[in-house]
Amino acid sequence: MPLPKAELHLHIEGTLEPELAFELAARNGVTLPYADTEELREAYRFADLQSFLNLYYELMAVLRTERDFEDLANAYLARAAAQGVRHAEIFFDPQAHIGRGVAMGTVVEGLWRALGRSQETHGISTQLIMCFLRDESAESAMETLDAAKPYLDRITGVGLDSAEVGHPPVKFREVYEAAAALGLRRVAHAGEEGPPEYITEALDVLGVERIDHGLRCLEDPALVERLVRDRVPLTLCPLSNVRLRAVDVLEQHPLPAMLDAGLLCTVNSDDPAYFGGYAGDNFDAVRQALGLDEEQLRELARNSFTASFLEHDEERRARYLAEVEAYKFG
Ligand code: ADE
Ligand code: ZN
Image (cartoon, rainbow, N blue to C red; front, side, top):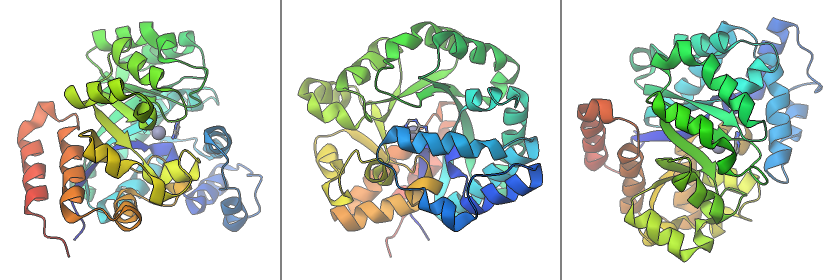
């Protein structure tokens, strides 16, 4: 039995496996510029975040109907459940779909067909976090928040993703203020490729409660001290960092140093179909490459539930945390 864990940094579009991409392409009459899954997998060699994003957005062309989003989410949930995920807070990128003529309602209703039943079908509690694409305009982000208003009972929070450098958090001040006024939780990608100043800005200007990635906080000791003091969770994605060249090899990932520094680190999969593994695979990989011991792995699992947005159901959080404490490593 795998270690129970929550996944807090997972882009549902990043769970699109090549096999499902071709199945949906056939179903929807979409032609992909790859002969087969093997040729597509050949394209999974990324130099940086942007080179990944180009493929990530290209493959979204196959996602067209509610059923497509339902199938995508169910495929993820089945894999996540097999790797010990008990709770998932799932990102989606509505602007990447609306821009192709796929309505907000199609995306949310489709995902909800799977998420609304995931406790029963997969044993996973779920939440949705709507991300704004930071390389699109602030006006577009505000329009997206408006388009989401009929679906707010299904959306827990907002996030910020896509190409980071050159798109500082401050660009999205107004839309984050509007999201907060609607009662939405706030997170943002920061310090993946962008500088530590973006992490500080996300906290101070956007009022985020968690930082997605946050790796580059290590360049600013005062920021590390603040993140430790305020117990700001970081949703790290070790396999993603290797594939997108934020770190050279997993053996050099700073996760152990970050844990030693007292940072509230969690381990997540980001875009598992593209980066070589789901949540449990990331745990296994850091255990092997970094020599994490059982107590460090338990700490990461505990942190994932501590950092999750379960304030409306503290009983559930306590149950998950008790499972972590009782877990026996094999
Ligand atoms: N969108 C999907 N994955 C992402 C990542 N790792 N960073 C920024 N935007 C993303
Ligand atoms: Zn991400």
